[in-house]
Image 1 (spheres, rainbow, N blue to C red):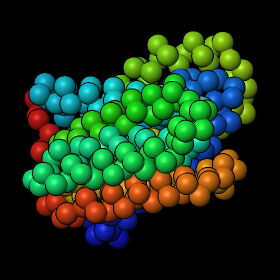
Image 2: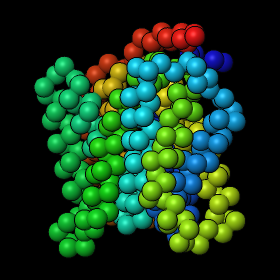
Image 3: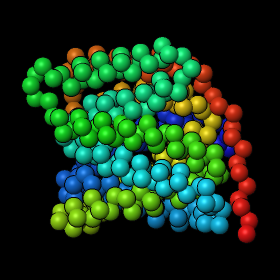
Image 4: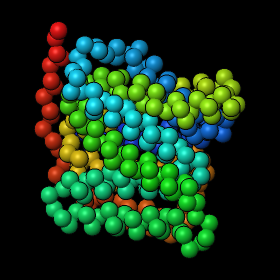
Length: 290
């Protein structure tokens, strides 16, 4: 079955599960080489895997394509670095919920209905329940990293759709992940050199890179070619729930009843915001010949 015959929402859901799995598995790598070092290793291995599989044609790149390719690569690298920095400090489900405010806000701003902006506010209320600031043990640095990752996530969805419209399959991903590797070098390389990069750690990072960015980001790019920003951004409402489940199963992070209520608010906000699900498949621009 070709990718065009697979429902776009199923591609997005599969990508979400894989991304949260990769984030949970990254915790062990973070212990050895830090959050930025883990992000850098994932981007480097991801770039190598993608180039070995896809071998994109550099001649197909036009001068007008460079800004969006560079922008997507940059936000991809920063998004991963900031999010892993958050996961290092706060539970996975909480980090995903805070990060989700980014794409949900993009969905609200791009919607034709002003009422759609009420849903990010509801999701924010859910985030407050998740972080439970009244306990006095809130990690502002972790929350700040998750918020920065959310900003990058919102931009990532916009640029991924643009790149996916321009380049066939996942060739656009093969062009942007190397950029992400370069962008994260300044933060990640020093942590790897100064950390404890055992062979086991490096091999685990390579395996995680196959999950994300290669497979999961590729699925996202294919899904975004056939979905609106609003539909995709709000479908992601279930990703915080995936984060809670993966965090519980792999990291033994058990949420409280109040935190479960917060997750429920985030999911409801995303589901209620969704209006219209699909987008006509964008025609691929033929490569430029020289």
